Image (cartoon, rainbow, N blue to C red; front, side, top):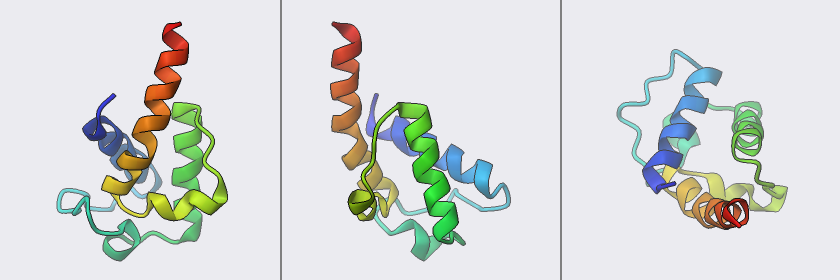
Length: 89
């Protein structure tokens, strides 16, 4: 799993929530809610889908760490690497 894989997955999730949203020009360093038409329910849908797809728990107090595509990848990558280690053992 790479940061680009995580970013692609998040873009897929956003597209499934709002298929009309243009994701080609999204800056990975800028907060998603500043670039896209996402409300708080959309954000929760993204978090729930990340939990479902990756099987990771994301505590509510850590939601701000998922603000941008880059911060999502930075936050999730170590969690997914740890998960892969457990699966490989």
